[in-house]
Amino acid sequence: MRERTLRILLSAALLAGAATFATVGDALADDAKDCSDGVAMIKAEIAKGPPKATLDKLNKALRGAQREMGEGEYDECLDFVGDAKKAIKG
Image (cartoon, rainbow, N blue to C red; front, side):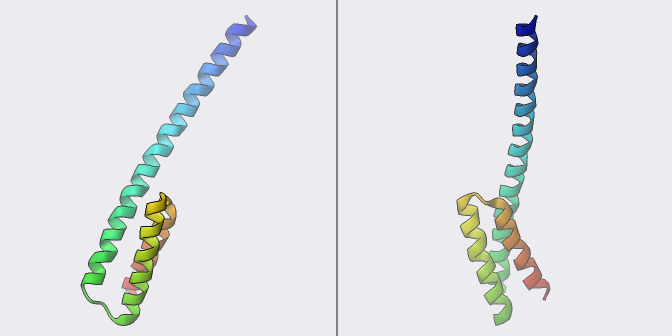
């Protein structure tokens, strides 16, 4: 009886872990796409030829976002994308 209870608990724990991992994986995929889209947006804004002050901020944000994207740190990449959006709004 005790062995059966342990197997049931282990099965439940594995199932819960798998569900959590799937949710985290989906969130990472979303962040990766948002990061990539953000980098593309920054490049498009730079191509428009903004004023020097804005251009400097966009270039800094682009370097940071690309670095973090390369490291797989998508949440930090999105921080740089947010900085770029602020620079665009002025």
